[in-house]
Length: 189
Image (cartoon, rainbow, N blue to C red; front, top):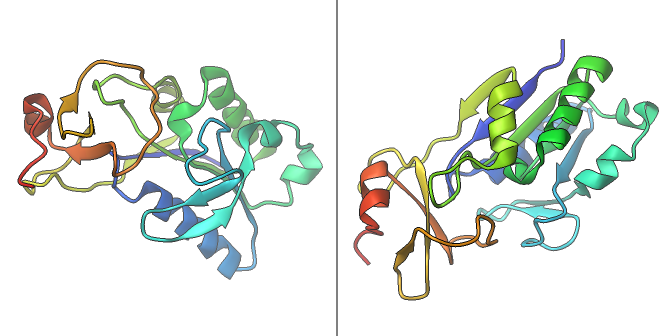
């Protein structure tokens, strides 16, 4: 029986690397996995997913997934969605339909919360609907578990105001423990 998975973690916790490895594992066993991302995410280029560790693979956009017929979808053993926090509630509900009606497993990777500590809409719906929720863990600079995403400016000041979505990677975000996120402490330079 297919399930909807939500694997969340802070920035830098290797979520995308995990997604790419899962895709590779399916391929290694002679099965195809469909890699998908929201069109909003253009950091790695159009229709491409890349991890900080250097793993890369072509993907399709979520809008392309929605246009696929059931016959086309059944060519895949599973659907893997990267940057799932950028999905809408309705898009997550579509994924539940793939699982429940098409019996296709869906594995979503994304952030749980933004730099203010607030849930992303896609993550909120995934937390409500997913069959299995798993944390992809990493550590803060102090060694404690990182649970918050800190956005910082060019001077290294942690920001707590602004637009929810500002695309970036290590140049703008870092995972911190709750204490250091609250303090705005990025650690020793």
